Amino acid sequence: MTSLQDRAALLDDAAFAARPVPQLPPDQALSIEDAYAIQALVVAQRLARGERLVGLKLGLTSKAKMKQVGVNEVILGQLTDAMHRDEGDSLDLGPFIHPRVEPEIAFVLRGPLPPDPTPEEALTCVEAVAPALEIIDSRYDGFRFDLGDVIADNASSAGYVLGREFPPETDIGDIAISIAMSDGPEETGSSAAILGHPLNALAAAGRLSAARGITTSAGDVVLAGAATAAIPLSAGAVIGADFGPLGRIDLRLSPPPPPET
Ligand code: OOG
Ligand code: MG
Image (cartoon, rainbow, N blue to C red):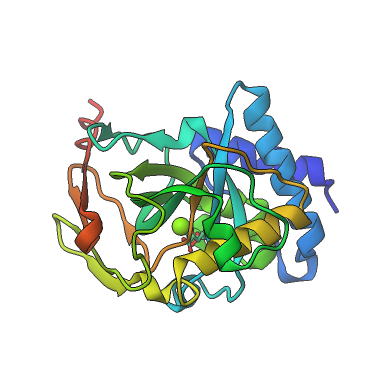
């Protein structure tokens, strides 16, 4: 059995080198405790390289997502400033292994989340709501993992883009969301698919982060989890995501690198 630190180093190297690693065999499946301990070490390695924590992400908060990856529990991951991308940027896929994109609802916090908030209490911590895109990139071969693997891998966190911010009282309970790539694939859903309401995901973020000793503060971003299955990214395409009353996010992907001669 490799140590938690060895496992964290393996996952961090995989992310850094954009080279996938095998998931753990079933007889070595991680406990949830050990999985979050590895995640903490993976994140610590990023912080040691100078990255800064900027918030949290929930994963697997909709049936569409659970079905796509075959894991049926809500998970928590941590976002750093290095993962942030602007809508105006052209997204270079070089640093990723097999990235996918998914549409999300984001919260910007005005203060720390309490340990076990009701959705109403969670709402009092919100400064703004916004549409968002998340780029996920499992560090495992074939994007295949079990619950412990994906928690250890910081919930596949790799990138995020925030759209325009709206006031906290904006009705986000049932927003039609669609996402399409210019080269074909598309997915549609509703924000109601996110645990019934994205605020339930924010409350879950309070609960799960408190359980792992992770604190939040004003200005932090919390991604509520995707309402639809994720779509693979292909170089040169354009992602267009429509969030109805919350507007759109359009993101251009850099063209593929020229073939080596
Ligand atoms: C795990 C992360 C899931 C979401 O929004 O549900 C997630 C994965 O699918 O790789 O970010
Ligand atoms: Mg996500």
